[in-house]
Image 1 (cartoon, rainbow, N blue to C red):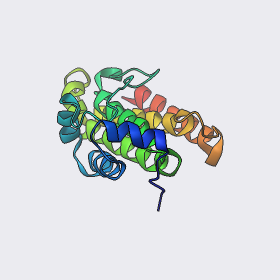
Image 2: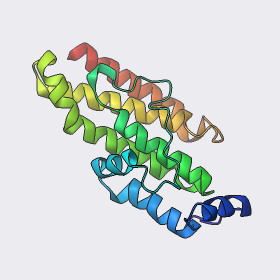
Image 3: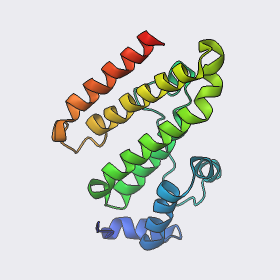
Length: 176
């Protein structure tokens, strides 16, 4: 089980804002892993609770909504996970789970929101969904490779995973 211990500075900072460490951890995990993406976004819009870190740079250096696929909500939740797990001193133990949830959120966007946008221009929902999922896999592979700068970038064959996902996306675009 990952450690949820905080250093004194982190603990005082949360305590002075009204949230103890254990509560912050529980709420963070609930919003990341138990709430739907839509529920998370509603809480994010209200900054509820305000003690957690709601800041985000969107999809970082990648487009937020590539090919009209709405990936930005998934990027918001992913940033929330990274920022709060780092603040709670449990990032290394939780990073893979946060990244897996990011992939789930991206695929959720492909199943529901993205197809409505992409279906009209493409004219083929299956092709749009396939292209969206291929791009979702590339985004996921990119965060596994590049996310959390303190992590070794070549661990577990992540470079090859990213290259394979990017090639699959390029194939999906060519065949769409």
